Length: 112
Image (cartoon, rainbow, N blue to C red; front, top):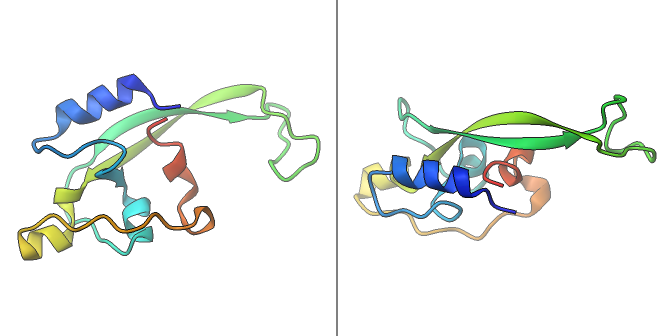
């Protein structure tokens, strides 16, 4: 599920016509696609809630059952903040999404 609040925050913070969920990702998600955010670029802070088991069980435990949520903050970056854009003056073409095991775990939670 995508959060309308995070969408609104990200969309209003962008100075370009990039679309959240397509052109805006975490630093680690861009790295997983072989891109690099330009040093010094400022990210947009987003908040989501991650479910966890309050008894301390880990997800690989057969008795793991998420029963609580905690806030998680992440910073996201627009496609225009990538080195490939700064070098060529063009927005880098979107690359195919990497397999989930290759992505940074937070990336899938960040704008839910």
